[in-house]
View (cartoon, rainbow, N blue to C red):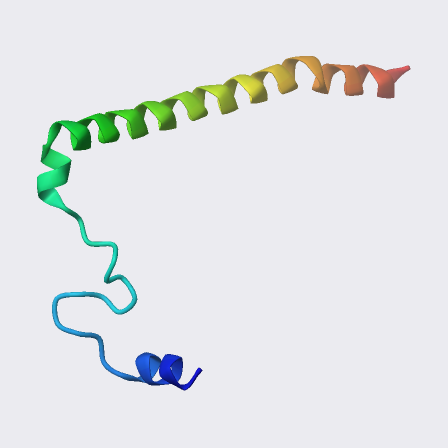
Length: 74
């Protein structure tokens, strides 16, 4: 517990942000084949999730909202 307090109070080391020592960007990995595939997979995943979210919202808006409005009128 006291070790955590002493780490919090000291100044960050030069070249790294405090608490981000394990999150350095490895540029050689990102330029390798595995890194490029990982980047492509992440971008494709973000696009896919965005399309699913948009489609779910569109289905909700076309099927659920008009039914609630019709129920209020009757």
